[in-house]
Image (cartoon, rainbow, N blue to C red; front, side, top):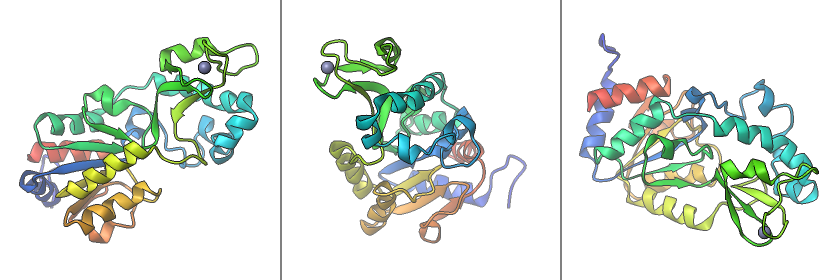
Length: 253
Ligand code: ZN
């Protein structure tokens, strides 16, 4: 039952779970960044994002075979993403960490907005647009520098060795970074409560983390519009807007 402030029993229950837990960990997906104007690329009809099949063009084989076609797709995407700002959902999660109520955050998002909002322990399992690296010599470039690396051929080239430069995001066909996955697993195993926010929890191997948390005796709370494979196992499921739901949970704490 909702009160005038929008607080429901579910929000109060989740606040209680957060207070009771020794270790709370968040797992976030594309839904957290939608209020920042970053559409989930799997949502149909979003212009820039679906003019091409990302599975084809954002694939490591495409990068190796035809880096120009790859960058034709990625360069405008980089520019759009680079200008985005964190929204109150990112800020609410940063605030939980500041209050000592959140140990860390595992994200599938590459947009660096959790860090921009002030979150400290952020595990980016799909990498980040923050840096791009040379595939020949491992030189690294900040997002702001990448635009200056393009030659007339439309490909980003290393300033040192002229090798092809690739964004430090996990492309289709690539393995997830080992260190990040290890840290994500450690967080999931040690969590009494995993707060899953804005993710349909369907993309593996990240989708296995809530299962890991359950197996090691933790609980789940899910704040996501869509249904997820873990809904029936969650202590709390909130299906409203992520900004409203997280705001209400903060208010209940
Ligand atoms: Zn190089």
